[in-house]
Image (tube, rainbow, N blue to C red; front, side):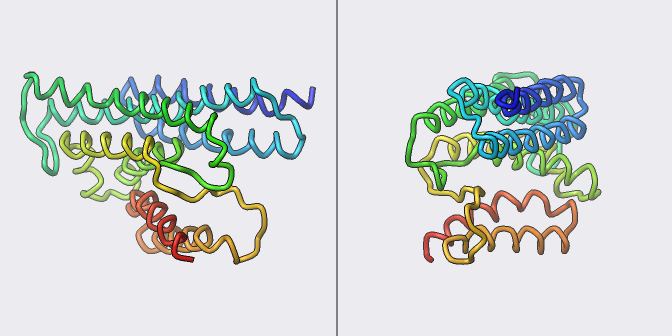
Amino acid sequence: MVKYIPNFLTSLNLVSGFFAIILAASGNTAEASWLIIAAMVFDFSDGFAARSLKAYSDVGKELDSLADLVSFGVAPALIIFVHMKGGLSGPGGLFASAMGEGPAMKMMLLSTALMPVCAALRLAVFNLDTTQSTSFRGLPTPANAIAVISLVLGAEYSGGSLSSALLGSPLFLAALTVMLSLLMVSRIPLLSLKIKTLKLRGNEGRYLLVLLVIIVLIAGGAGAAPLIIPIYIASSLAALLF
């Protein structure tokens, strides 16, 4: 029975993503964001359990990718869709444009489909790419989800007008969708957070990332959450210099 524990945790990742989609579709994007965070916890736990129990399997590998596609590709894309639609039909926020129900509005809404497509491509490539065991090429799908939900949670819990305005801006959300999607299928080298040793040497970028995120969140609170992924990308690029 022990060998089934990693797959059970992966299934909980998938269940969390499924209910995140349901909540997002009903407009509860903050609650959906918390479920995506729960999916991330299960995603980390299944890999840890597989390594600890030596319970690896090809089925588990494929199941993990399918769960990640739902939780970190489809769910965040739907969150963007919901906020984009709200921005297009309402007064809008920063950089928002009153485009009515015309083709431009439909094209912007359709752009959200790019995110799950690129997430699927990224996961398919990752499963076949043996060079990504210690580092990533392209933005990992959980990081893609963090970039989206950090805006939602920042707006929900900080009262910050900037996060709220960005969430109400269809132009910003469309640009964010395209940027994150392209980053997922890019070959930019980025840090893997799988730490094999606690020594500083070889982990400079990881420790820099953790330190900067802690400082930013302490200084800015929930409103600074959208800075997590830019810091992650900057720390990854800085690690190339060491």
